[in-house]
Length: 353
Image 1 (tube, rainbow, N blue to C red):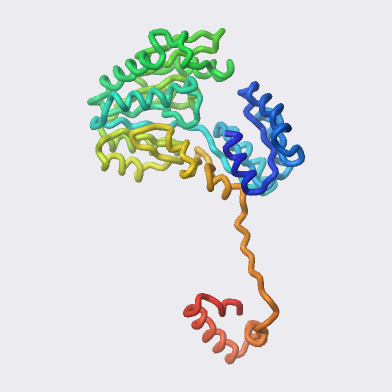
Image 2 (spheres, rainbow, N blue to C red):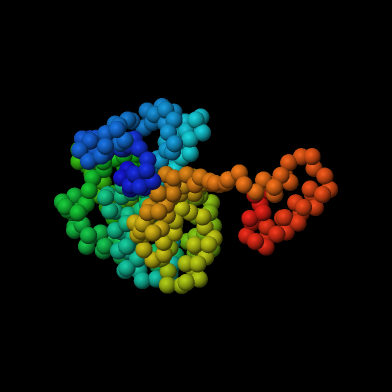
């Protein structure tokens, strides 16, 4: 998330200061080391600042601030930017819901959801955070998810080269704590602190009041909640803060259309997950609690640009424009009214008055 908006900033002709996430220290150090070899040092810098230091950095007055992180951190960045009237783009975390209808291909749905949730050990802002599953297919879906985990990571995911680890102990501890205080483990649940390992886990019998439904979860844990119909799912989603993504799996186009139009989110994807955030032709961004502004492709260019209006005139035609000057008499008003009528018929040339 550092490099994608940077491309748009460079394309729009900006200098930039990059502050990679302090959670990924090795990646941050690599960017800090490599940037001077590939980009002009006078225009582009990488700083290794902690999240707590960023508000002070923002107060140095930039033309635009682009931030990706949690809602709490984003709020502090926005407040700091507001003191210097600096515009911001915020891509913030949240709880991305995934509705699974009774009319869908359960096997394919399970594969696509499991891949999106457990890729990179669940450390993704755009992964499905919880499933709202039609009660009629909940048991089948949970069983299909179990089969997918076996297929993806084998009988022991700890030994799989395709399954990652928590990026640091803070995220590991937070994920472990909400896991232990929420629902019933249907599969997974094993944790090894020394390896920062949390097994891919599916939870059932989860209540809306459980910890995992009240906090952002940046790890490989997927709660499955049952709903009776799409109306209940839409009501549940709309009770929460606006998410970065909403996902819906159904063969019924009316169900898809309702979820798309009757919920509010940064993005929407039907019968797949995450892919809408990878397409550069689509804007990627949040709304409400999940952020503001967008990036990707042309949208990144627009984010880091300013649409400046310019009118180039000469000093000719003063014999016409003098009508705008006082004193204002009836003759002037009549001529101005006549000119305005002409303006509407001739694409606005008389608006120079």
